[in-house]
Length: 259
Length: 268
Ligand SMILES: Nc1ncnc2c1ncn2[C@@H]1O[C@H](COP(=O)(O)OP(=O)(O)OP(=O)(O)O)[C@@H](O)[C@H]1O
Ligand SMILES: [Mg+2]
Image (cartoon, rainbow over all chains, first blue to last red; front, side, top):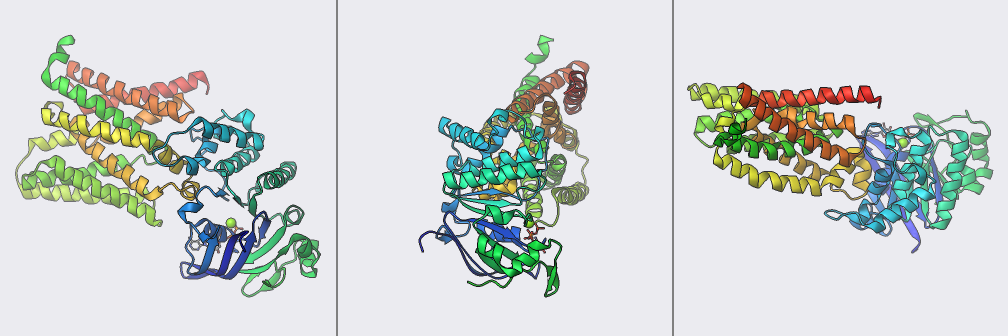
């Protein structure tokens, strides 16, 4: 299929001789908003890093935009918002500078920033409603504002896919609502494919098209509405603390994954 | 006062000093941003092993020093890339190993060498015309390349993972940065000395950081502080007959204290 953005077949990843991901197969089509959920240590970040080409699989095939993950031609096609909170608050860059860094794949080595690059960066800042703070040092923003800037940075290369790793942790409920609304809008206006890792299993189904649940293996992948109405999911979402034991690691189980 | 600048050795020291200071100050921006404050100490002291070997074998010590410093810089980078240890650990190890080697080499050469003290503490009288030519060729080239890699270096200092996803060749840029810093340190040694050169790789940007919240301002201000400290330090050392390297570093230290005061008074 030509509108396949991510095609993972039988992916295995080991780090330090222990399995992190096992026999994961996952297909993501263009324009789909996928919510990736699962317990801590379930391998969600690792799966994203495989898709981004930062972690090499031990076994299996990972095709992104029809090319092996990490292929240089995929640069700029993927915007990434990493999980860890921003560390160095004293770093001497402005909001504008940070978003300009995301423009790098379109600028490249030895080249200088053009006025077109500046226009694109401003446009992304407007899209996340942060253009009024463009000259602020990045360290002087609130957590939610920083998150918006990092989304603008991920958008700055005009990507076709957004990869977001728990972007709403530390963001208040109202801002979270606004954030999902913004993502939905961006997804439609830029016809983006979105992969979003989140622990907000209460809200995720309402904002995504599909949901996948990962704990070493991929336990379920399907339309959010179907997943929502499935009995197994009701068990999990109806009662948030419900934890089933599956193998050695206790985790939330939604059901077996079927292709 | 004017007469000082008419002395041949003083002219050579000034010309070499300005170029070296500007280059060290540019490096200091990334040293401070990447929190590598002790990397200058590690690399310069590893140059000591090279200098001592040069004396032992009767080779130009600058050449052996560049080999030792360059190899150590790459090793520090390699240990860090490998992911299990931080740079500071690698610096602590290679620093000591190279000093030990240097001490062994000095013992083997069995001759009390006055020149060695020039390398350890800096000696502007020892700066030859050839040294100045070397600085005039090497410093502008390194300066230009680091400037042209500025956005890559800034990006990878800020967020290495995202830089990698964006296609910045993180490892090659980082290794090149370390190698260029090693060469810079070696050509700075005759002026400032092995013991103190690392100060020029930290203080300028640290002081400049107090005045500005913008990386362009930081780079400009840092280079300014480095050059002013070197010119003023050289002048004072000549006028008051003090050690040149120490005077330069102390002058930079005074500017740093002024920058701290400035922040307190301005309340920023
Ligand atoms: N460099 C590494 N070496 C060895 N094991 C690792 C490494 N990085 C991660 N792991 C392990 O891999 C597993 C998956 O980690 P990962 O970060 O992908 O989980 P996650 O699903 O993103 O968790 P969270 O919800 O806490 O973010 C964890 O058990 C972790 O301990
Ligand atoms: Mg994670």
